[in-house]
Length: 433
Image 1: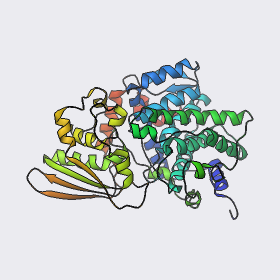
Image 2: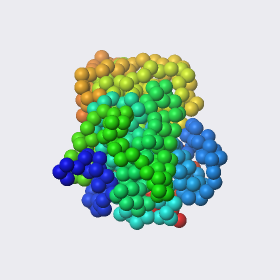
Image 3: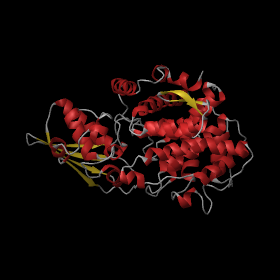
Image 4: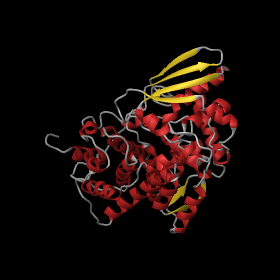
């Protein structure tokens, strides 16, 4: 490996045969099931019907299935619809340190590619999923710049395209072209996040469709630039700043899919430390009179936004004061609340006013933890809560009961979904017939 560029090391890893360790396989299957369930739940979310209608109008075909819907679409269109649904409820798994929803784009694109092929060997499917998630996460781990472009879509595209290239049997040389064309097609910024726009999951959707497209282009003889990550106009000059070698120095030694966190709540991951603490407090029966969350800069940036009476559902899922108010009032976050709820309700306004966010001195602009909460109770007492690992992380895993509760709600939100998505998701993924 002496003298090899970090990009070459990454491409060698992406194209190589892999036999996943048993524990990594188990993590991949678990996270795949979580992602498919969330995608099915997204089939009834705000905007989903419009996305489906748009995809259907773009062309008919029967390559791939749709999560939560009957019928099939061409692979690229199916990837577009399914990726939107996976991300639109903000319930999809995330690699916290990378700040990348690593499974969202990869799963949607792979699902379409496997369907189009008519099925896939289980080990081959898991290896492609793990490699795609690894690359997407690795790009985020390499960055030392704050989010400017929408990293989950852009890093996700790179990982998904290489994962699909594995399923399509492309050569190692062609992997370089796939990477280059992925870079040439990459798009998505944080402006949609700032505004709470439904364009946010559309950026994930576009990345999944693009992953299919760039692989098809290479299969049909088209080529791309070969220094797409480290070149003068590559990923680490335009989208993020950092050193790819931070990831590639350990590539293959650590499977990043095993570091991915699942989301207990359908809201921005940066809200989950506070929400989990409030869930425990409400279950204990104690009444809070105030809570101050001392959080890294990124948490404040992502979810420390003010409550607005006329906020969109996408904005609401990223508004910590609102989410906290809902947790105190209801003891849970239900995605069905957002479209019809009146956020000008005096009770919601009063509960949201109890929540304050203060930025701590964490120098890592990509950190979501640790966090420290100072809770004040109605009886005059206070409590300091230090949160090193948020619920849903590998170090603070959801309990079986919490996971079952999430699956039950996903199933309820997806009345037209194939039951196999919930009952046997791995077989659903690899055996499309």
